[in-house]
Image (cartoon, rainbow, N blue to C red; front, side):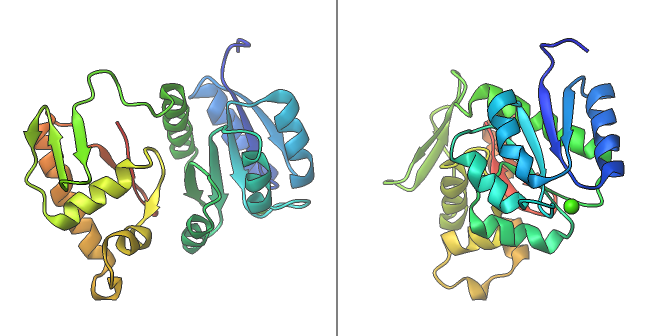
Length: 227
Ligand code: CA
């Protein structure tokens, strides 16, 4: 393993899980990893070692993951993937707007973890800036979106979803958050409705942008915009 390999900090109090993840990060991802098993040593370590990404378990001895995420965000934009034990907790975490970049729920496959790590590292390298040839234009005044100069035929709801997601590239939105953004009275719609609108929106984007859908599903969580 060379020193230029990306360094991933794994904060996890279950040693078996941590060892498994560290093995996969090394063998599949080619990353270096470091494991900490309690929360109260994390901030000092992050300050001194400046990891490229942090996998952060919520429930930890010492300081918990929520508090750590807040403390780290006060001085660093390092990508953070929060790990939870229950899928229902993800909605609560999203609501806290901690500034985590992704969320993953146990039990997870180590391969899935490596894939998420890889995706976040790629994103952080791009600094979330649109590429030079980026052709998606969004005009919130006219309520119009265009690709390669061609105006997309979007419904008002599809436009609102696209506008909301694209304002924060890379950030994951839950279906509930999206519903809050786009409807005044979101009780009248269900999660399914959001999925249907997103599906239609992606198809229109992909048709105009030669296959680029711009919107990713994040399993068990919701959606995010990506260039
Ligand atoms: Ca734990």
